[in-house]
Amino acid sequence: MARFDPAAIRAQFPILATGPDGKRVHYLDNAASAQMPQAVLDAVIRFETTQRANVHRGVHRLAEAATNAYDGARAAVARYLGVTPDGIVFTSGTTAAINTVAHALGETLSAGDEIVISELEHHGNIVPWQMLAQRRGLVLRALPVTAEGTIDLTALDRVVTKKCRLIALAHASNVTGAVLDPAPVAAAARAMGARVLLDGAQRIPHGPLDLLALGCDFYAFSGHKMFAPHGIGVLWGRPDLLAALPPFLGGGGMIEQVTLERTTYATPPRRFEAGTPPIGAAIGLAAAVDWIAGLDWQAATEHEKRLTGRILDGLSAITGAHVIGPTGLQGRLGVVSVVLDGAHPHDVSQILDTHNVACRGGHHCAQPLHARFGVNGSTRASLAPYNGDDDVDAFLAGLADAAARLR
Ligand code: PMP
Image (cartoon, rainbow, N blue to C red):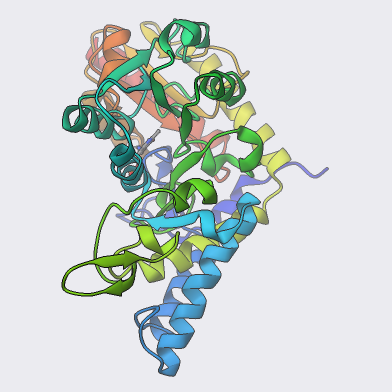
């Protein structure tokens, strides 16, 4: 097999050629938002310039073209995930998807019911459950995190009780890069009659996924982390479950019949899509899915793994640098968070910026996880298939510079 060529992939991403001031950026902030290839930009422009209209309302030709394109986008995402389109709810992102479940499923829960999350969750998979727990008198419990930065599944027996109604966990951590094995989680949930929600925001950009094999009931992700526009995401739900849940947001598009006294609701997925959806962004998401499906993921995964190894090796040579998370290459993605002794992650990121390296410094919306490791934040490099050795080397050089200047 030919060696994986990240430069050929990078060439499809206009922003990676130029950067904000004409200088090439070593873009290692993919876990926050990945960049968009020309194919996605073209699909959005094509829609906005030839098909733009609202969907599911008008009967004129533009409205029909827009509706077909939007429904086609749903079908494309469903095909990619190996599921039926009736389980694909378009949302504005992972956060909106999780909040939708928190409200819709939340309506069916009563005081004393329990929800289980973990200590490594993104705030998007913590706060909606805390708010729900407050609204309905539920109990929120958390699985601990191991010293290696993975969810401690040995605690499932202790934490998941008969009162558990939902286990909501990150499929992959946005800080440690650790990937969850969902099988024991699904088994623990089934034993108690609970549902499983996986927050797939970080797993989804790293190649095809057999969604039905995961054993979950809900799966949430964002388009902007998988080479698609901002403002679009997906809540996948088992169609039978979605059909049994009440809507969250009310308004146009989600109804069957409205009188001034009462409303009956459309069947899913439209029951959960009140108001005008992000139509162009959904079309961009479908183009991104096609683009992803065209990559050689075996090679891309090997490539990301090799670069992750290069980062981990390089870090071990920088005095005072500590990785939060797995120090090996098994069971992890190319997301590496580093603490530099004595240095604030914002200062580290700023120095990295002077090296033309874009990566994230802070708590990455995971304060409880950083508290678990006794730190306020970290500096995170996160990879995509367009990253190369030069990006990693620039990151390591910038980090060594930061270590020398800040300690
Ligand atoms: N969960 C995880 C694991 C994430 O990484 C993110 C994005 N950082 C989110 C949820 C929230 O995604 P969004 O902001 O797109 O809703």
